[in-house]
Image 1 (tube, rainbow, N blue to C red):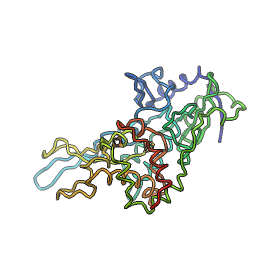
Image 2 (spheres, rainbow, N blue to C red):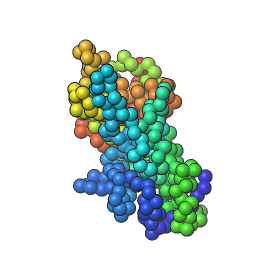
Image 3 (tube, rainbow, N blue to C red):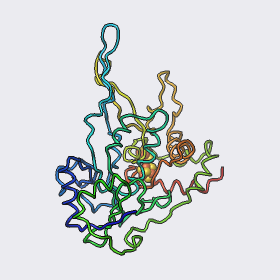
Image 4 (tube, rainbow, N blue to C red):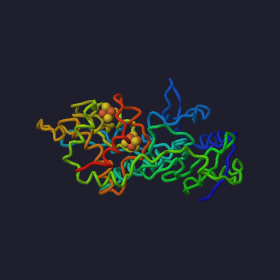
Length: 339
Ligand code: SF4
Ligand code: SF4
């Protein structure tokens, strides 16, 4: 992998040139005490001091709401205006951590399955991921328990790692990453001789994911789901902040009209309405069934069907949960489950 160095003083100049070249920059911005990904107006607005953003970067390819197509009833049929990808901007996602870059793989697994999802696929075609290794973490991070690392380049086009306070080691991972650096080569210097591991946060391994996945194979009827979910409110916050969650709902706007838009919006399998049938039957009528679905989907169904895991250990679900459901503690419990 090609390595370079960029001084801190040149980093914003590089991003400004990328922006001036016509790409939009989507990066962490702090507003009202919260840091989340936003389309930045000025590269001076970018925040790089946080442990983790409140929201992930997944909205760049899977927006919170998105028009899929428009329709109009006409005599003898329906006129459709299909999904229009012409206005999807070329976007550089800057400053996401390795757990968020890695999460585009499970998202691609879900949206690429079977026929493939056109809106997601077209957006991903126009995205370049410039990630930032973690030099600090908190007690809810667990990337190292799910085959990740604070300095993993998996999923990134470019990975930056802070070298002291003066600059960044630049690892150029893909051709898309190279296309972003080569036109601005004068801003980059030769890579320093550093031990990258010494520059990274130490994230302890919290559990054996292999043992968890083996336990889950026989855990469908276990009482553990009732015990673990007893305090879950079904609020869905964990799904909305998760970089790898892909539940969505389809709505009409306006509802019941002869013409309008078909909208896709984020949803959560933790909501009681998510699986409610029009007959009134709900196959996941209680919260323990919905909690079971969340964990089995991420750690059993997705690995078996899509060869990807639906969790990268970012810890956001635990930070966002109003009743302190700590995911890695629950997974540790499952590791030792006696089925
Ligand atoms: S399940 Fe939780 S820890 Fe895992 S990727 Fe989603 S938000 Fe992060
Ligand atoms: S954030 Fe917590 S309370 Fe809300 S659905 Fe998720 S686990 Fe349950």
